[in-house]
Length: 230
Ligand code: NI
Ligand code: MN
Image 1 (cartoon, rainbow, N blue to C red):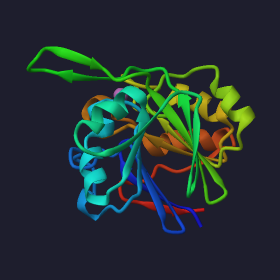
Image 2 (spheres, rainbow, N blue to C red):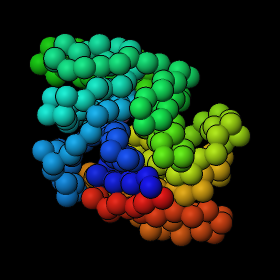
Image 3 (spheres, rainbow, N blue to C red):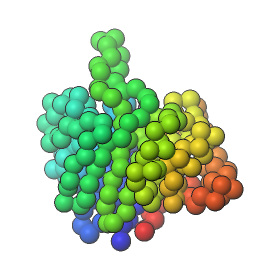
């Protein structure tokens, strides 16, 4: 049975038969988080892009678990300089792991590290999303993205069991576009992410789920720390 834990913001942990991975760990800097980085046991850490609210706890988690970070080539190399194991991949590519398969999908966003002191921005490659196949289920994590038409292709080419879609607006899709995304990826179950972490991205997750229901799509606004099993 696949266990899915939401750690808040865009951070999702998938666990099946002793294998565990976490996507976009941002816990220690998230005022809404209820879980602790020190308690998390994973073998793989997947990063959609290089923004702080997606990678903050990646190096610490990698070190405490001797885990491998899987990210776009540039971001993976950048993090390897901090002494952690990495695997650099890129958009459209997939890799098999002991737990299943990971494919990196496109996302329309940006990806860089802003070095305030040096007044420099370091390019971190393209932003992405992930299709993870694990425990017989397919999970789509859209990353940070605006709505894009090829989400229809994701829906046509995969049987998505659960889709994690950003609804926060301002930096990503807002709820209206996320409803369209939910229809296009044809997910059986949709979980809104990337909202309510900070005031600029406040949204009503339950209202979004109610609008999903109007379109005959199941979903849930998971609370930080909450676990579902499929
Ligand atoms: Ni971002
Ligand atoms: Mn973000």
